[in-house]
Image 1 (cartoon, rainbow, N blue to C red):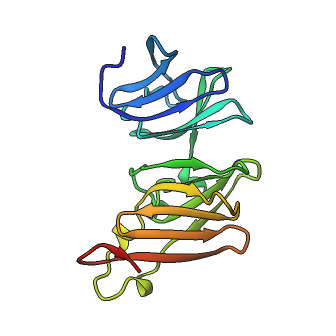
Image 2 (cartoon, rainbow, N blue to C red):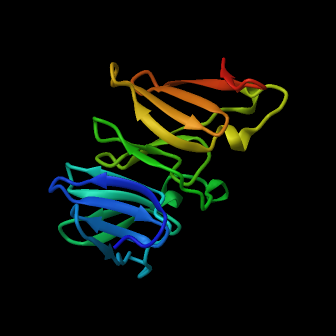
Length: 193
């Protein structure tokens, strides 16, 4: 059964639930949970799975863990690591992995182990990054808080709009126009402005 704190859950195309927990990943059929001992290319397991996203097109699960961001192929039962060094300067890569989200067009959004909101296109193997600059933050700064992405959603009425919740406000991206807007929290009442 499930033996740890649960952080996230997603359902695959066959109806199984995949549960990310403090100690590994579980597959749940509605009655029984089975612990999955994934082995990555580096021959390491996964613990503290903080977010999951099911990719129907490839029958795989994208997962964020302490070891990095991985794509787990449900048919082959293999995991392939997303390598941030292939897309970002080494000095900007962190161990932080908060979230991953797949939009309706198959693009993956999240922090991708760097500050800001990033978009990975698996079909083209390209990444775009949206970082809120210091100039938009006002006198109090908070660059790291503002660029720590905690969750992502696609606008229900407009496929081109992506929303990201950060530790210090919202980021709104128009992925067609390649523009973004930062909407910050206004203290002390935490209203958005």
